[in-house]
Length: 418
Image (tube, rainbow, N blue to C red; front, side, top):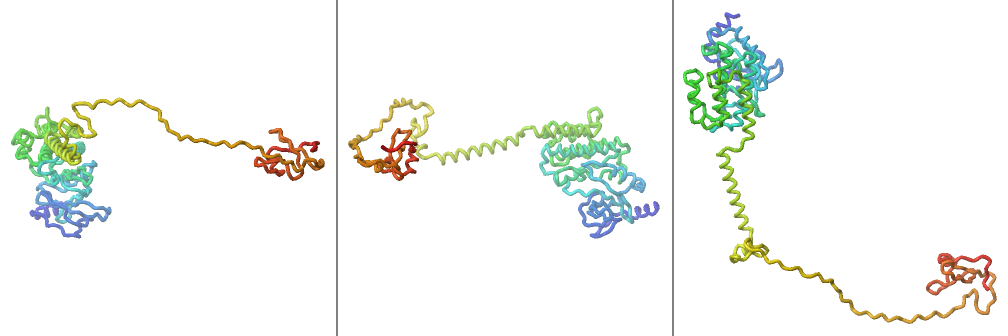
């Protein structure tokens, strides 16, 4: 089996041809090509065994070293598959079938950091925020004994919710060449140097001209640190980049966790820091323009009579800014007297009503045995009445029995009209 793999590898010295839609590789069905790089071609595929979408990376066999064996590939895949971090693209599987060597990885929806960096660079806060997530991913991998080997903008994805996903962990070691680090500590040191170069690229928008010389050790870090774009960066970010590139162990980062902590602190400071000179200048310009528009609007709104008022004379309804208006004494309070017309009321003389004999006791008539004496205890008035009439009302009419009772009269017992 090992002999057949080596034969296939030796006979495939050219890049593998692109796979067509619907091709089956292992238990993966190819759906479409989503990327290509120096390591191979990446396809969107469907894992019909686990019923999920994956990113299938077909490696270019001509990039495999002559001493790369199947055991090394499996060992590397197991090490990368053990990484579980929110900022690391997970590797599910590594297989070799016919003329293909492929890696099944987590499918990350988003865009590459390489395409997300504008020509003038990212904002300082965004640079340090993305850098902190990349450094956190490196710290986790280094603790597991896995180095990346190619920390670059093309190997970093930004998800749809603006989070970092670092791709191709360990792929540089799988595609082993003579420039691969021999010791894990050297690999971690190289990852941090590449992180410093990537931070500089994110902040300035350009890849440092002599960055490769610095990584190869043929140029000092000052070749990057003293360049014109780097000099315009904030002091905190420059300090982090300098410690990433510095080869002196006394001044450089020894662990990726240190770079993570400094970058996270820088993010907090960047969020609290006021606007820089250029941003403040733009803000002042906008404020002046708004003030000019406001003054022009006031000149249009103010009445023309106010604008043309004589010098020294305050506009109507406004007080002069140089002299105060004289105080006027308040008028004394006078009670309001309402004149009423003279009204003369003519009083009519009160005429007594002529006495009318009570029908129950007419003069000269005999006593009525049915008549009773009705007494009013309130007015002390007594009346003789028969069964129908019981005295007079206030209008001079004789009252009925119901009216008499309502007026307070009641029959006196054992009293007869005399």
